[in-house]
Length: 224
Image (cartoon, rainbow, N blue to C red):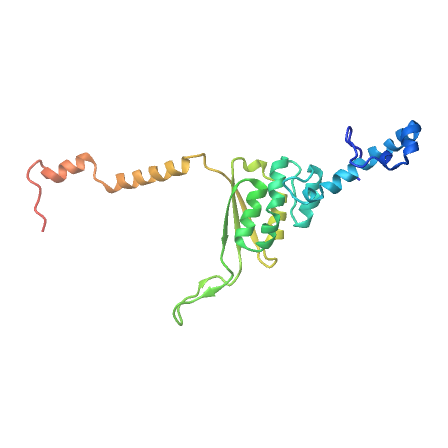
C-alpha cells in the first residue's frame, strides 16, 4: 500500500454495506467504518489506475526507479523527473541495441546530454589483393569521445560503468572527454580554415602586379 492520502475518499464506503438499521440508528458504527475507508481508498485508487503505474509517462515519481530496473537502466538521482521518464521510455530500445556502437552512443548521450563519437576498428584485418599488406587490425579496439560543455562535471566512474556494461566484454576501450565547441564555432572554424587556405593559394596584390608587368616594371616574360 502506498500509504494514506489526505482527503481521498473511497469509491466503496463500507457503511453502504451495513444493514439499514446500523446506517440509520447507529452513527458510531458508521463513523467506525470510515476509518477503514481512509485506509482502503489508496488501494482502490491504485487498482483503478493500475495501467498508469506501468507507463513511465504517468507513473508516480518513486516508481520510475522500479520500472528502470525492468529494462536495465540506471537512473541518476540528480536528473529531473522529466529526464528520468524519458530514460525509462527509451530503456527497451536501448536494451535491444545494447552491444552495438549506436546503442552505446545513445546510452551515453542519454546519461550525459553530450555529443558522442564512437571509433572502432572491428577487430579484423583484410586484403584486397593476394600478398598485399593487410588493412585494419586483428586486435579489437574501441574509443569513446564525449563532447560536453563542462568536462569536469562528468562522472567518469559512472561513464566507465556504462561503457563496460554496453560494449562487448572482450573489446578494450578508451574514453576521451572534451569540451564542446560553442554554438556556431564549428562552422566559423571551417570558414576560417577555408579562407586561410584560399589566401595561401592566391597571389598577393604585389605578386599579381609583378606577374603582370615583370620584375623590372617592363613586359612580363614570355613563357616557354
